[in-house]
Image (cartoon, rainbow, N blue to C red; front, side):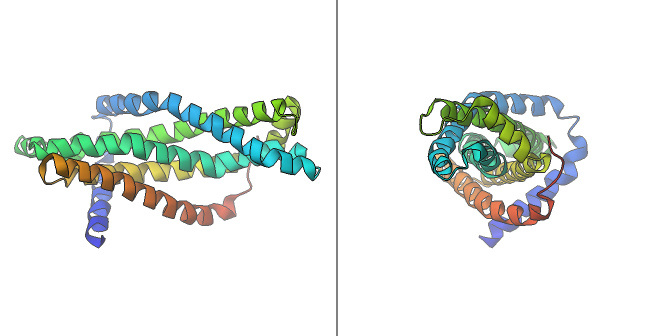
Length: 252
């Protein structure tokens, strides 16, 4: 475990040192960004729509019974932008994109394509890892923004159509405007950026260290997803604790 953690840390440092080269690899970054963002957008919006709806469906009747129905919009919005949207989008990307990264790089390692790159004096970190980590770090915060907007819309639809809630459209979004600060949205974006870097580094590391043929590729994919999910949940608490002093900021 400690060896894997150390190797991932070294890979993260190598990617950081290679960042000045990102403009040279802009074409690969753009290709990866399109694959990650465009291919995941519909799934992300569908997931967040129902998450927002479930939040409103579960909490709306309880708030209405206590005379707090007008606070439903702010509750759904804060729950999404600070916690559920970044975590759920990170889980989605880890399962969908992280596994694909690990499988692709693992197959290249098994079939000695990475060794061929080194023979041609091409650094695999610059050529393979850097574009993927940069692309996923840009794509995940964008997906979180879409998830916030669609999730708020899902909560509004449920609160408007459910007879036990019956919160008006203007009341719902008016409460969001009163409750949600810019710092709340930024909180989720910071989390999503850190999660994206973790997913990219973990998945690429597992792919680059694959051994044992096709069976080893399967093990690397499993490790990439499991390790990413564990680190996402651990870092979620750490980041939440670190960002508490910045909870209040500019209001929309």
